[in-house]
Image 1 (cartoon, rainbow, N blue to C red):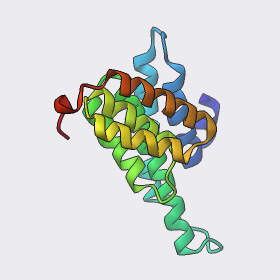
Image 2: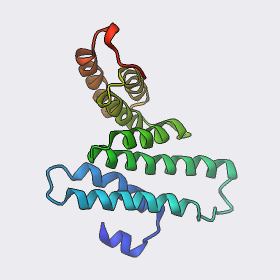
Image 3: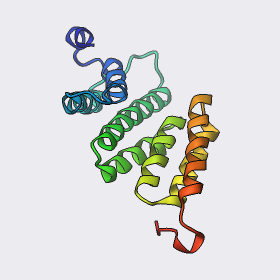
Length: 166
């Protein structure tokens, strides 16, 4: 990991890969906070580098617009995941909404993470919608997680008259 960054410190793909992977690997680590800081820094640096990329001539402007939107969404997903791991659910929600709703090619993982955060915040209708979207988008592993979370959400959700407002 460190060698990749040392060799190409501003490679957007490397930064995004590490920013996304690190939060998944910090459970029960004594230095989890340091790793989350590192993941956040990589995601922020990727967003900064995207403003500086010189687009190769063989990539059309339309294709670049999609590619950039996808990469920005990955960075925001990583930032949302980091914020959720830190317990900052409002920031997580904001970052994950940015990822899910502004990605030109929506990803099930982004809607899944957003649905989980909505549920944690008591926004049950939004959680239900996001988790259903995650299940529709897949892939299969995300579909299974989303369906499991929907069952848990429906079992724990207050009765209709008690649903929290959005």
